[in-house]
Amino acid sequence: MDTNVVEVTLAALATALATGLGAIPFLFVSSMSRRWVGISNAAAAGFMLSASGALLLEGLVRGPVRVIAGAAVGMIFIAATGRVVGRYDHLRFGQLQAADAKKAILIVAVMTVHSFSEGVGVGVSYGGGTALGVFITLAIAIHNIPEGLAISLVLVPRGTPVLAAAGWSVFTSLPQPLVAAPAYLFVETFRPILPAGFGFAAGAMIWLVFAELIPDARAEMRPRAFTAWLGGSFVGMSLLQFALLAR
Image (tube, rainbow, N blue to C red; front, side, top):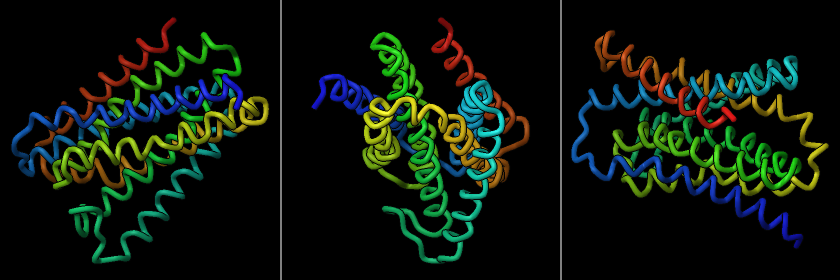
């Protein structure tokens, strides 16, 4: 196998493993009340809205029509997935059941879909040279840590063990090493579909945030606290992304 293909695959695998680091804070949390579930939903919503905004901006500069179409399809896909999942009253996801299992399945599905775009991004960036590839890989790896935190914020307060949450976080990023090498090898083929991929991932996350996470957070929190946690996590994630992308 070509050395560059191995390098690209290993780089994308590193970004996937970085997602599991988001579960580390929960090693130090001893107990979680329903209020903590509300806080975790609000924080996860802020992280995901910020990530969605970044994806939409990246897509819009490459192809506005494609990113908008991708976002619409992403929303429809997650809405349909939610309806299908919601038909089953005895769902299980690890130790979770019913409504909690539904939330877990949806967020794992959304973040897994999101990872395809990031994997293509890693592969395409290496098509522009090793230096650019390393920079984008590092940015995505660091970006994946709060994404893993967002996943853990939904799973752990509902009863998922920390190590299992870390495992599911890494699982959602496995598409990255799977698609990075093909994207590198066929960079000119994959580049035109990147805007649609960004839009699809953003649309899926936005739907999940407004249909699932925000209603759940508001049910467990006072309005002022909800706004503070949602806004704070959104601003924090946005500042991190700005720092990573500023050259």
